[in-house]
Image (cartoon, rainbow, N blue to C red):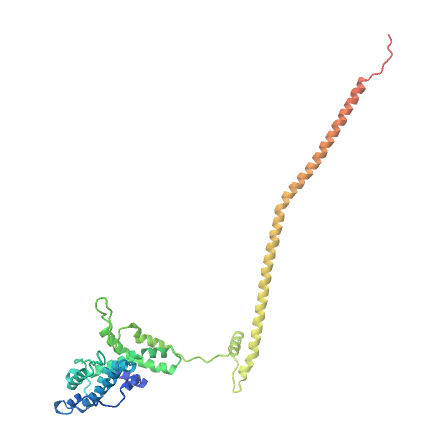
Amino acid sequence: MIKKFKCYETESKKLELNKAYDALFSKDSTSKTYTQCNVFSSGEKKHEDAKKLCSKLLYILEDIAKSPKLTENVKRCSYLRYWFYNEIWGFHTEHSKKIGEISFIKELIDIRNKVHTKELKNMCDIPYDKDVNLDEWRKRKLSYIYFKNHDNIKNISISTKKTECDKHLAYVENFISLYKEYYDKYCKNGGFLWFSAVGTDYFPCSSSYEPSKLLAALKLCKPPEPPKSRISSGSASVSGRVGGAAPIRNDTGHGATASVPSTLESATDKMDSNFIRDIIMGVAVIGTILFLFFYNMSSGLKFSSPIKERKKKKLKHNYYEEYEKEFEKYGSEDMSLASEDDRYYLNYQPERDYDY
């Protein structure tokens, strides 16, 4: 665990992620208003490094108190505790020693609580965790910086800067062990009743900050591909279809020039084949339409022809029947006349001479 933390700290230094926060406290000046820091000048509490830190701390508080709502000062207040313990970590060599066992730390925090209490109410507080050592505060500082830079790393992951992605990839990979440690400590058991776990300012309990998500994005980070000319890609596809080898490019670039005619020819052939195919399809569609049209016409004619034939037959039949009736009429009249003639003939008898 310690080895991985050292690697993570090394990667953090390479990226200089804490540089922007350390710059907020870069002014090397001391307070000239307050004299509380003189407690470290003599006696049992004498400590030169503690006195310097005390004067610098009070100067920073004075500067922030002038305009506490300023964005830069808000950042300084939120980072003040990590800066404070990191300064102590720099000159106090017993890093594994608990805060409660280092006497001057309690004195420094008490002095801070006595100044600018009105101007800096609920701001720039420095917690006193007596059971925590300086190494723990060091880890908290690095964790705080990770979460503050999370969105910037995310933006890098969706960029095309492969070198930057690789640098931040190593940084995030080394943070995983510390992330799991704090997650199990602050977030794994959940919150109280229906409230979800919140975490701390150096480790918020939110799934959106999971390193695995950043790692996946950073691994997909690729540099932009060089633009490919349509001619070269077309010639490559033509040569692949034919089965021949791709033209070899020499120093003068004749290979690329030689591929141009074949590409143009393939494009022309493709256009011709598409044109011919369209013509065939069009002719087929038109032929189908004409076939259906004439087929329907012929079917309609066949359907109506028997009726017409029956009508014609009926007309013919009626024509002959009329003439037959007329013929029978005149025939009957002739017959009646003949019968009358016969009757007249039979009734007429000339007078004869009778011999008596």
